[in-house]
Length: 394
Image (cartoon, rainbow, N blue to C red; front, top):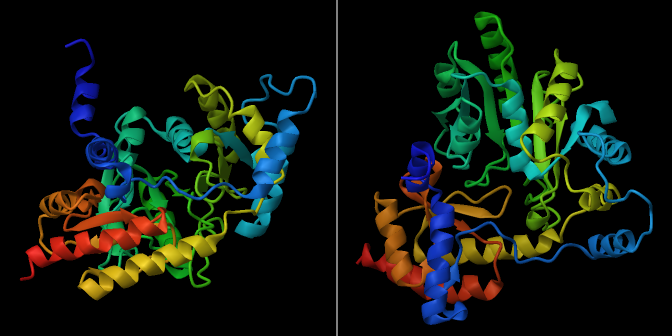
């Protein structure tokens, strides 16, 4: 074998999301794209806001000297200031450009953070269900990922998290709104989590970090608010991207922000600035940095996701499926009619419906549907959802 044993193993364990996406491509080639109902990938069908396209054209046509050159590792100072100013209002904290680092999306941000804080053998804990690629990101930097169960409604279980923390633990990684469940962790639960991490930090004589992965922060329903983690725990770090709220996943632009109250704030920022370069990202994309500087607080029209959420939830509820309606993001985590979620996803596939089994997210017995799709995909898939359900509920 010419590739490493680790990568060979990772290929075998590769993400169910990508596996189903690739299966979708095969089925679409066989039956036609309009006959396959693909809910596998969180790749929004919404176009970016008009303001993004206006700003992009303006900057692309600029003759400003050095506009495409390298910049400081953390990013353009004026971009970091724009982000910090907006983030100060969002997080209810006084954040300066020195606490912000521009990254290649949230995935890039997580890798930069983990490269900076992890030593070989360190452990990162995440509540399950969780985004499966966290496994690979933590492994990239010599660590291991350990899961802690959530409550039946997917809210945080502090007892489970507390039991999972050990002398090997370096950080807790949360994702709110959550992929795949759409759960938003309450402010009270985050404050309780902050107290737990402070107690465990004291017990083990080291800093335990709280990392919050927030690419879905602006995609929320029914007026739900996403709490500030900076006000809940001082040793906290945020990473996010503009992939979801501006529909820019292909542009790979995001940022990391360190809590201004963090004990080792300067060390963290300096370490991440170096990691941003030595991991091969070098800098976040120059053009996209300049574009998003003028778009702070903007997002796609959320009424579209609200409508799609209702279409999908109403349709599945009428059939008899069980689920907890998501508070945010654009995923529905549905209880499988049978315990074997892989088998049920295969039954859906026979109806040309592509879903992702919950086992791929550490949530067996469920399946995930991404509803960032055309409305017709949702409505036309309902007969197939009915047939698959009826197969096990005669």
